Picture 1 (cartoon, rainbow, N blue to C red):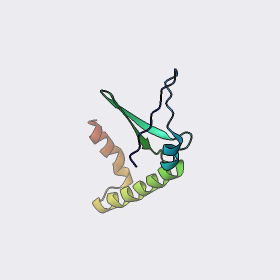
Picture 2 (cartoon, helix red, strand yellow):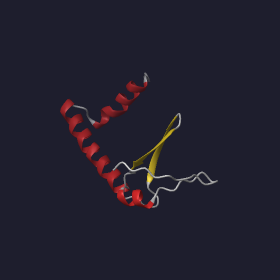
Picture 3 (cartoon, rainbow, N blue to C red):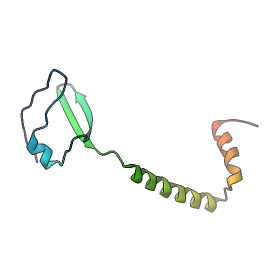
Length: 92
């Protein structure tokens, strides 16, 4: 899909993405973009924001993996404050 269309920026800085491109890329109102500028080039990169459910699922997986790794190397829950202090350079 290499398509060239001409569009103009409004007085409020808004740019219309032509309908055919919006449909082809499945863009909806509220779609998020990273905007990159270099010299006379302006690039829009469609990005997706994870849903709350996706974030919670990843957090759950991370917690399970972290617990397994801690168990493998012998870290107990009571060791965590000491390890945090050590990582922060805090001496008791």
